[in-house]
Every structure is written in C-alpha cells, then in structure tokens.
Length: 89
Length: 117
Length: 162
Image 1 (cartoon, helix red, strand yellow):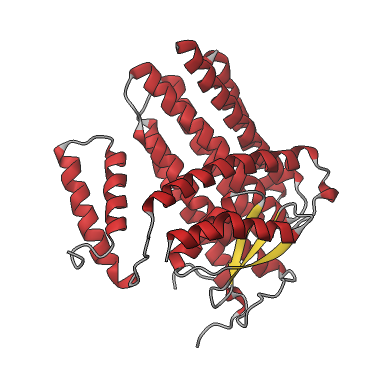
Image 2: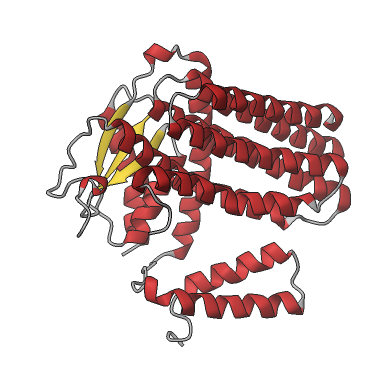
C-alpha cells in the first residue's frame, strides 16, 4: 500500500510546485510573488522529506530542517523591503 | 498490526499530498490578494505536517529508531507560518491601502502611526 | 538563580530544542544544551526585560492540544471553500477584535492562534495593544467570528497568563 501512497504524495507536491511556477509567472503584484515563493519553500520541504522516506536516507532530514528554520527569513526580508525600502534599519 | 500501521501511514500521505495540492491550487483560484494569503498559510502547513508525521512513522516502523528532526521541522513550520502571514498582510496593506474598520480604541492601527522622528 | 537564568522557560525550551536537533541524549549534547540554555538568555536579556507570568503550565499544554485540533478542522473548512465555492460567493471581511490580555507574549500567542485557525488571519494590531485586525476568508457573520475567538481562545489565555 505504501508503494502507491508514497508516489501519490510526491506527485501531489510536484504538481503543487508546477502550479506555484504558473502563479509566479502570472502573479499580478509583488506580495503575490513573495507569497508564492514562500509556498514553494514549504512544498520543497515536503518533497525533501518524502524523498528521504523513498530512499531510506535520513540525512536529507537535516536539509529539510535547515530550510524550515531559514526559509521564512527571506519572506520577511522581502516584505520589509517592500514596506520600508530597506532591509537593515 | 503492521497492516494497520501501513494503512495509517498511507492515509496520512494521501491527506498530506492532497492538502499541499489544494493550497497551491487556492493560490491560483482565489481572486483577491488578501484571500490568496489564506490558502498557503493553512492548507500547505497541514499538508506538510501530515507528510512529516507519515515520514517519522515510516522510519520508526522500518528502522525502529525515532526521528526527532521531523518533529522539529513541523514545529518550526507552525511557528513561522503566522510570522510570514503577518508580514505579507502588512505588505499587501502598504501597497493597496484598503479601507479598514476602526480600532474601537483611541489609538490608530500600528502601521498607520507616523514614524517617530 | 534568577540572575543566572532570567527566563527559565526560554532556557528549558532551548535545552529541549538542542536535544531534539542533536537527536541523542549523549553527554556532549547535554553539555552543549546546558551551555546554550545559559548563554542565550543572558545575551538576549537586555532586549526582553519583562517576564511573562504563566500561572498554569498544564493548561498551556491543553490549550496547544485544542489549537492543533482546531487547525485540522480549519484546514478542512478552507479546503472546502477553495475547492467547491465559486470565487464570487466568498465573502471576505476585515474584523476588529478587541483584546484584553496582560502581556505581549499572550497577545502574540493569540495572534498566532488566529492565523492558524478557521479562515482567519491576523493582519495588524492597534498602537496601544488593545485590538487586533483580522482578515476572514469567508465570514458571512463577522460578529459570530469575533465572539468565537473571544470565547474559545481569549478566555483560556486570560486564565493561563496573569
């Protein structure tokens, strides 16, 4: 059963990334693009973890952890840039 | 026993994948910028959360050793989702300037106070 | 003791987080966790002078369990709105929620809870920390949403922090 559920989940997140790319190309405004990149980071974390399950490689969990810890900082930095015209105050 | 565990993991994987896809689909479907903020901050977070639980359970089941990093990934995602949501909402409001309801107190909204000299 | 550990809760969280990151309870991990739990609160003490008073740590745990349960329900709701509701029928609204919580930490916790739960998102707070501005994805009745937030989350937080 796991042999079907795991590829299904991986396909779902890959499709989600493609939808994100379409949104990134057609986004009407700057905050929308930032939001899309934020969503892509979260989807990539899921893909990394599922890849680790598929290949029995627990090492990739560290990569997922690093992305989860630092991914939101780029979102906040971009928003700060839009709000104030600078990142470091 | 092992069949039950397999069904549980498979269900979690299918739920997680579906929610991740729904969140990204919501980004494309919803019309207003503020509505679009709702889709990824919720659906995607739970999608990834379910996938992480499934991954941790699979490792526990196959190798017998618990993986605590999955727990940490989920914890960081749940902690940071409100932060990026708040900052994105501020950026939207800064660019589009919607009409806001009154605060109900004497003070204005924090983003509308003039910066201190 | 309180000069060495200005924020006991922060120290405990850091210690636990480091042990989870290391993934083992070997002696070297324990030593590193103890160092971090001592040094980081001391270094950041100047930026966080106030101390949140948590009266009931056990109630905090049950609150987190409640929020996790609500997050799952919220996601099913949001997924149904995204999938099945026509885009022109979604009634979004800005809602003002007056809050009466004693410390900034409690307000931050309430704001995070609102963002993670049913179709609502914290967008701003008032300059005197007495009101939150939230955006609801689909709120045909804004008063009901406001009443639910106040009764379900705020009263519980008021009992925990004081």
